[in-house]
Image (cartoon, rainbow over all chains, first blue to last red; front, side, top):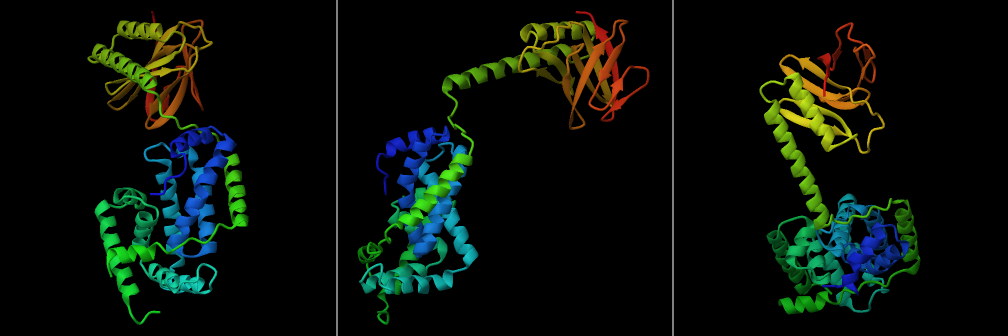
Length: 181
Length: 193
């Protein structure tokens, strides 16, 4: 699990920001923007879109800061907003079919890495249905437990486990195909 | 392919470096949102504060239950006056009215001590079919009563010759003609404390 530095102080920063402290807010932005950008990138596999989604997530979180009641950690709360924002975008764009190709094209373009495995992996992840990909991103890349991912995705823990199982099956199948480069 | 091989491959998905321009744009827009959001401290009430709330709530509940037991069969003018006097002692200068309806007793209490010092007590009775709402209050103090789902503000006044005038949002009742408020017929009488 990706633990933000000095995580124990995050809740204090949130309290200060809720009270209108701009420095505390700025520190929260510094801590969370890179994490949320990375999450959005892995979820949508597109750099510019990830930047837009991260920005939208943090604006939404800022506007809703007063409603954060510490029922969960602040990190979980922000990830929930990020997940919903990303999911909404994925639904609106109906990009499931095109996402894989777009992701692969971006990797093949060469700016993100020389290894062909990268392109294949991006294509494989992009080819997953949104729910499966989000489950994989939250658990594998963001280090959440199945229970945490379930809370973030708003579904049962068993559903998350099943989605991860299915996602891995699909990824293995795709990546094992010999006709792929 | 084994899980370990898959994980090794998945670990190779690196995230493109952050674009500083995009980051600054996001920071600016979030800062604008922050500046436009009201400061809303969301501290959980402390246990001590909770205990205070609970104690006040329990006290009001007991008082209300006591009142209901006292008033349940029928309410005599003396009982009304006694009830009002006791409530006024509990909330001196703050009690706008005691509202009895369908076996429930509610208090209309002002946030601050009322500037009106009149101790002339009175009782308003509002009837609609079998429904009866009784309002015990003081001359010159506005009391808010829910009638037919609508919150009505009533300000009763006792004149020098002992007559009662009731002023509402859009009416003044002098007792000369029957009046219906939200379908309830209004009656009024003075009380001696």
